[in-house]
Length: 436
Figure 1 (cartoon, rainbow, N blue to C red):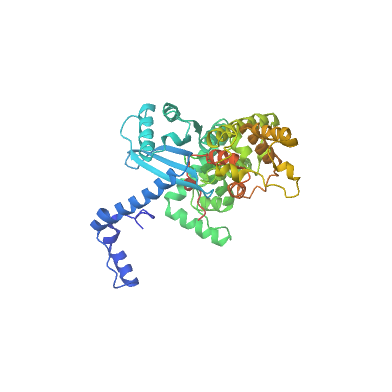
Figure 2: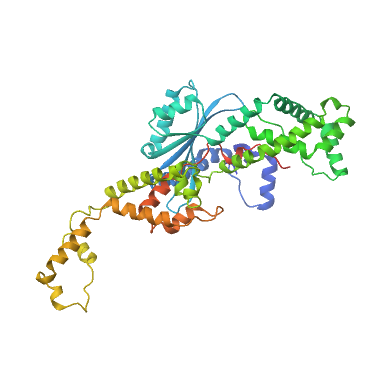
């Protein structure tokens, strides 16, 4: 409970908790607070640390997400998370460290902390990309560490929508009016109780109003959506409580309705890409996503350069991981014997002997086999993948690669590398939406 639910250490001393445990098992002896802090939690940490380290040691490519945040006591913290596709083609996410950040929030200091953390985990040379917000200090910190930077798509989309709302003075004014209405209901128990009463009387969903949050554009959408749903109830309560000055005009409600329809696609995108299982839609990973391939490109002229890049990466893999095909195998080695084709029992007896009339032909066959290069293998593999038909959008691309890894031995390595780049540094649990 302490580790998973973030309960305080003092829970073991709480009278209610102790009574609850005694009811479940009168014989169970609850560990002391000291026992937990000195023994059990450190042991649990070491066990978890060992499992994560083993997982990271077994991969060649990792993606980092990092963010600076401030606690309620105005203390600055840096959180660094790591994302990989493991040997079973499952996306895994680990929080490597959350550390107190006491220095200035400049690129050099942030970069030093990032390098310290990745060095301690032994993954500095495995970092494929780092996802952060659009802050200049974060971008510069990643570049100074020598890594590739991708902007957080959720943060970028947040800026786009917020700037669009600000560009419409009328809409921004309505946002402030709506925020004032929600604040009134949140701060007045009488108004909140009256809202529930009228909701029951008129058979409206018993939902609470949602307040917008400055740092999350989609909270504006949720506020508009909920107020639009509760339009009649909210207006009735405001009038009954003598707060008609807060009421919105029909023109305002009409604009809210239009805004909800216009913003809904952006909300769906934000919710989907904020999932930890979502891959980043850069060109290479789009083509390696079997659901999209070339269908994910609006301009087909961009497909061939992507294929060319992938072929070049496959050639590099084949050249570094496979034995050279230009050198003939040692005829005395066991591997050469196992690779030799079986002799056809129906062939003429003279054909099996060295020399003879087949000597020139056999030499030509051997020469043609030696001319097959890593580049040839890469082209053949890419051609096979190109001929594969896309799967349905709701299917798991990582499962497809797991099932086809043997068919595409080199391309699957690139898929594991590129599809591991997630779309956002914002965790899925940070959405402000409330359905209660």
